[in-house]
Length: 250
Image 1: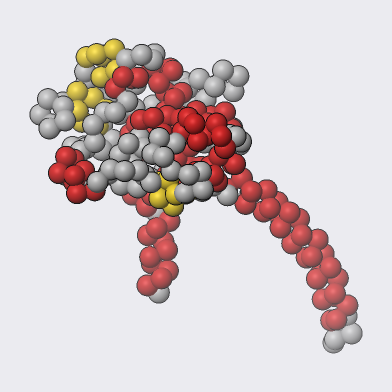
Image 2 (image 1 turned 120 degrees about the horizontal axis):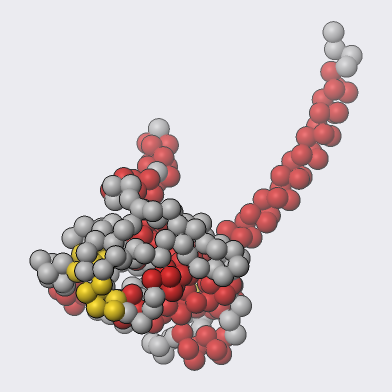
């Protein structure tokens, strides 16, 4: 019984995260088959996130193979710690020092999409705004009193007021742009990207984090089709055999 309750709790964790955010999230649908998006997301994660956050349950080589990035190219452009391609994706940040800086060590992000959900991550990444009452000068509309700095401020800029998170977002099939690009109605400082460009970059980053949390999703779904076909065929033979066994039973 305890195992059942624990399993149900884990299954509903993303919903709990939605409730904690007051239900104000932008819903998106990730695509693990979009290699270009995953590659861009990997580059963004490496350049802006991996200085603090690790991916200790994944290996560089697996990511390079899945994302169809040549190993030499991956080592030259996406590994800055001197690690080998076959090593785990760790960083060199000292956890005790990080705890002094931020109040707690930055968490490992390998499974963050499984815990929070893709819509939460996408909304969180776009939800920073200026708040002079906070130690780092920023707050987040999804995660109130967040202890993380706005590391993507050079790209997005700094929103002067709370962003408009909670509108329905959608990806345009031809351009790949994210609708609902007006998350920030007023900027305190401008970034290098427009609202639409930043939304697309955050979609790519969220897509990559989602892939890291479930790297076998595409293969599992592909095999699942064959399993269902096998079950359907097996059911026909099982039904005929059952009917043959019971036809003389009165």
